[in-house]
Image (cartoon, rainbow, N blue to C red; front, side, top):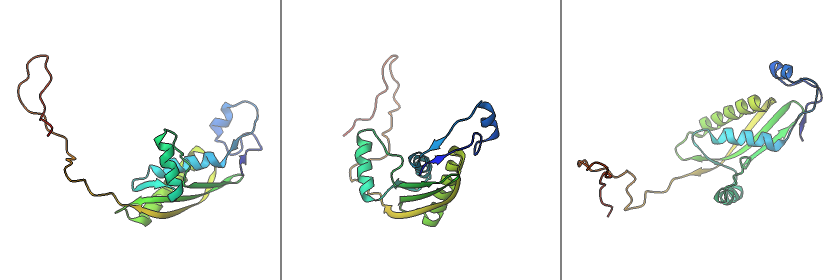
Length: 164
């Protein structure tokens, strides 16, 4: 269902309504609300990704070709003045899950109410997986190599440690 604003100025801030002369209609789709909610949820530390296994696999393919789906793992139901959001997410191992769900819920409430202008009646968070980072591969050095502190000739590049 799409939100339609049947009366000019209804559901719009007074300063925005005063700036627009005349009337009109505003339609906000469920896809637009889902994208706002998805972007807000992904910004919360401890959220690895959104979606279930198959949707994450499809999302990885989309990301590889440069076309990400910000609404993956998010379902929004839009009414005339209210919206409900359902999220499926993958948490990073070590993140307290109840706290993460509350932070995601708060971020989605704020973003949707501020950017979309509809009242959020509920945000349901389902944590369906945990991301566990793999071990560091042997032989890799995650720290940058130091630059040697030898005086350089004017106009030359500084020497660096040889890579084995």
